[in-house]
Image (cartoon, rainbow, N blue to C red; front, side):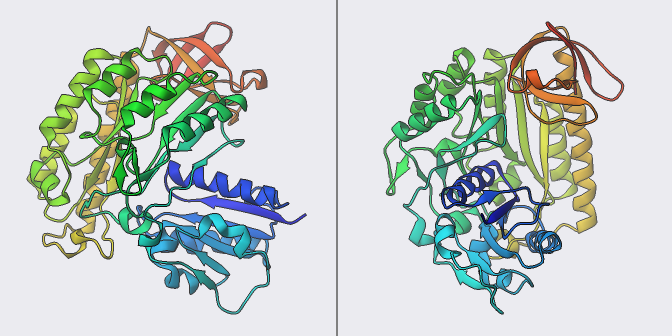
Length: 440
């Protein structure tokens, strides 16, 4: 039996697609093994959002060949769609597959003969604009990442995703509900809905047929799933009706991740974002009004072209005053074929790094404050299978991460806990109704 191993860079959407590709190999008779094991085939799913995509790809290829020098190396993902010829030049790479080809991977690599030059199968992204391929992760996590939407129609000036994944397109509500029921039957208790622009769900063949709110209502009726989490949603697409529904729903948890990118209206304009900070304030206020204990995560980019010291401090103060729980901080990096790459007002790399450090410190402060606000409350934890230093981890509905002494019986189980106190290390000691645990 041939062996295949995977490595995934980037977002939850990539993880869902890697898992789906893995099942294609399993159906074809391959055995899926860990990356560090000697495999006949290595599949590396790449990202184009984070910096140094080329360096990361090269490093993973090199590591794969250390484990298995004669392995067949295939590169897929956003970086593969954007720069296939550049990847083909990486020593050791045998095949590069674009966005339209990655789900035909088994067909393309039926012959594992290594050639002097990498084979490239990649076509224009316009060829896949109306082609939605469903994906979900299963078997490797307590929770499942369920892809319901792909592509994006938003022309943000810093982003290559529309070039790598094409136009916005979605699955049908019926198909998503069917897959959610399948996932429930497998024993998974939490689904994380994923997409490139999740709130834009409902477009098929270039026409809007459904709304994300309709999907939310339908999934709330799926029996067997204990929790459903919305991975990320644009503030202009997070309506009050969605917020109000989540507040009283049976399965959707009080946790939103809402991209902001900048707290400066000037920079939001340069980014071509479809909202301004006042709308963001309204969304956060509405969430906290109906769900006071809701966890709110925020994406923010520092060092965008034209961002002055005053613009950054405007963002910092805006975030500092906002009732949010944590930040995902991205240091701006130039991307070819984007409008931002041609803009004036380039921010020095050292300044970008300093601003990033400031926001990471602010994020730690926000997370500690959020955890502190939960002291004395009860929470339901879904424990995962990981084990580190004798501990296992899990999350409350509102995304407080807890740890407990490892007990295999608790894996994929929901346990009620009471959050007791924070430790000096930023952890939260909790008393579990059946066993002691710690949250951090």
